[in-house]
Length: 154
Image (cartoon, rainbow, N blue to C red; front, side, top):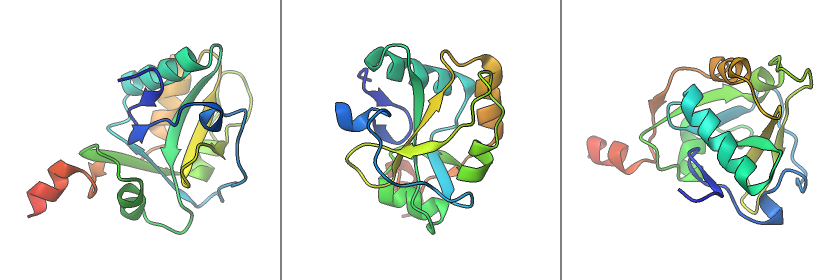
């Protein structure tokens, strides 16, 4: 995995377009479903946040996918996430988390692909921050976009 990629369903776009300091318009409503590829373990979140920090020293962030009005399965399909499983939350549940630096969290649309959002974390995020974020997600479910899931349903 390169320094610009994370395990959230595909690579984080590189360059200024991917960086959270260059967000595009696109505030998510509280009820918008937010999807992250994989099991969303503390270890996977920490690894992804460190990979982001390697590209943008002093900043920690994670990537997610969302298109308001779409279901979690539709988001996984549209994002073409390769993971066999994914976890979902809502923008509102993520926004309402209490994190160590006391600042409210928000998902900001970033990158050249529509539907890609970045969540800036405290620098550095604590175990409690990662556990709170994990707790904001529903249990994992099969990803209809993964090659494994497609072959199992054939």
